[in-house]
Image 1 (cartoon, helix red, strand yellow):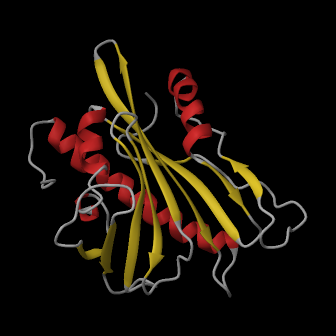
Image 2 (cartoon, rainbow, N blue to C red):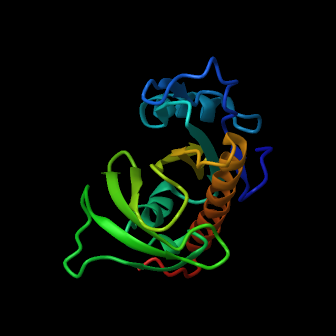
Image 3 (cartoon, rainbow, N blue to C red):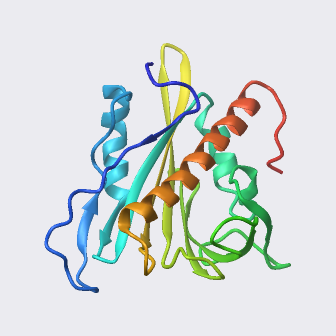
Length: 220
């Protein structure tokens, strides 16, 4: 494969905005363009999941993006980290701490309270689990409160396994939609969010590949 290991790939460039629609009149945004570096097998297998899980209706005050990461580890290893809604710091940067209720259980509607490290335009984030499918390896969450600038942020992450000539690997897709804050441009908002997602996916690759090689990583 031509793509370098543990590197994030931006799968979607937002199309040129058509004539601006008023807030509340969303246009469908479909992330269907795969970048160079993915094989035809990967592209064909990912297309239906992109349509089913990574398409949004985006209005003129929002932006959306889709990113991907190839990981040299089995999909069940990757999923074991991705599904841990109550412990996002397993692979996500910039998290000082995460707390859940004493009687927390993993189910749609569960919430977590995240404290963000200093230096970012955020202090806290309250997040809700919107989707968790242990058979299809798909999960998603939305930000519902806290002190931050990512208003109405919703994200979906899906994990996809591949095998060829006895070699097993995984492609992770992560997409989001978010409001563009007042005083910011769509380009600036997407650049910031994309950067955070890319760094998280790179760390996910490092964690999963360490486990796959027989190393240790704290995902308990």
